[in-house]
Length: 430
Image (cartoon, rainbow, N blue to C red; front, side, top):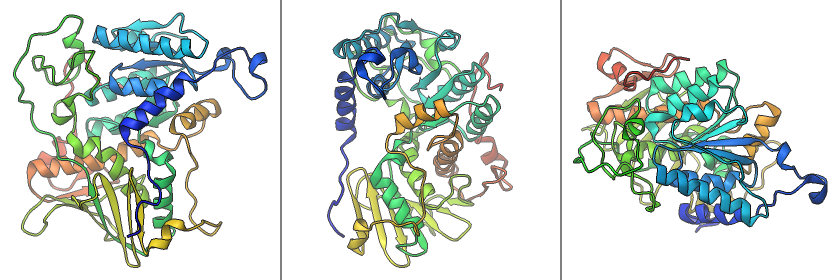
């Protein structure tokens, strides 16, 4: 295949670039900036729920596009670091974050009438309650991926967003990257023929929590960190010290995350779903590795097979059609035949939703009250694919799935696993 014709920056570089760009933002009166620039009074006001490593990246993206006026976290040190970073970003731009409000309980942040919308970057087990309560409070939502922590949670989140008429963007930001858009457009326009097989490489499913208790650090409300999830004693793998800017390992445990099948799968299975034009649907069956299937395998109604398989290209997606192959990841876009990656689209080709900036797209849609590129429904359907994989891995048997009713056929145990655990007094009432 042709080598790396369009290379994207790595996640670490991406985070650094976002923060540097935010440091260059300028927020001054409109009459100084001139036509086309927004004064602070015209900007959307944002509150952040979750102030860890991912939020440190996101505030760099949003602070130069909107007005970040509040943050919330159950770990005092992380919240203080987030507030300090936000203040630094605005100060370097010649403005200030005066009036920034800090909260421990997200419900108090939602009660702040000055906040127009919220950015949710909490552990996965919190997403459903955060999104539902934000929608009920009249806030538009940017929710990190994977969108939910279970299939039924995701459907309730979609219903809440629709019921309260909120604009919800899910953090599957690859949909706003031109290389992924080009790959999907080539696939859907038929340039590699009918899609017969898709290979998706992401990491493994989650495991049951097995960490030993550690001494609870000062400044961390552990009861509120656990919230609706199954209670376990504190371990720093779940909530590292505030000075350690890493992505915590709660993702690896099914009580709080959904493993790399959902963490990276929410990105790469998302591209596969998009390429198959299945944003409102999904596979009809999933098979765990067995004598007939070397890898976990999904089957779609049109006969397309998708495997969770390491095809030796890193985290990415391989589309295999009757006339060619396309490989896509954050590091490469390659094709066979190789000239496909240089194709110039015309009006005859399939058109996709246009977005070159995932964060600005959401803000624009809030103002215009239209749907963004990655809606709650899309986020839910992608997360569902990830959960189907995890359920099949755990039960170790083939499962028949109805993407319309969102139920397994003739399998009570699997159907019970569609639901997430919600510890009282928390609930998912919409």
